[in-house]
Image (cartoon, rainbow, N blue to C red; front, side, top):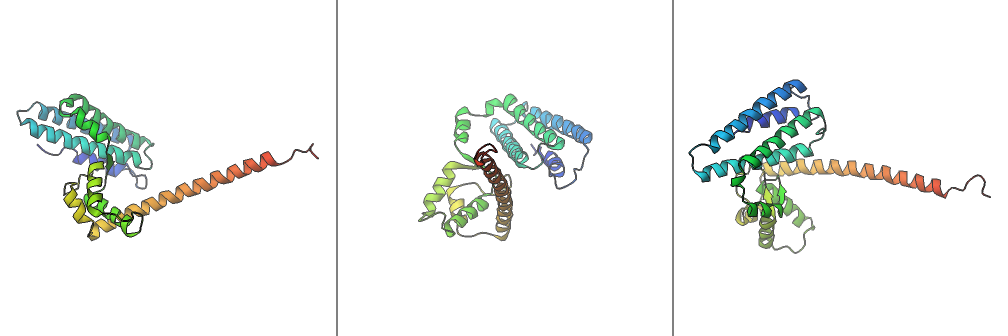
Length: 229
């Protein structure tokens, strides 16, 4: 069994970002996605009908399902998702998710799925998540924190869909990562904080414009009419 989403991820990365010119035209993208979607679904069917161990098939299906969820979340958050390219990519991912959920539903335990709904789903690695919490502690946002208690709380309430995670999101791994960070992780968080700052600046600008409009409307209502003395 092999990982089936490599080409789909490449197509998404080359055609989703609005700052880059899409690698494919709309018609070419439709064709490429149709071919790849059919291939992926055929591969899933082949695995499901094979004589491989049920535990291996379940792990295979669940892993692909989680990656597709991550891709769906990423596309939803991408600027330009409402464009024709963005819509085509999102529809392809959603249809693959529906295919898995309909044709492989026996691998999804309703009780376990219900537990997933009670957790916060994130796309950070264990080290990135730990570094963010380390920043909150060091900057005084979190006060008087017992790090082991924090680790247990995070593990109970968080699920990561970051497929590049090399370590499981366990109490031990998260706790150990609170005390040190590598350069790659710090660079990743700096990039995240820069994106967050950009969003805050955009929201602040919108809030200022809305506040100015409200003031102008209020002045218009408070201004006496010409017939008033």
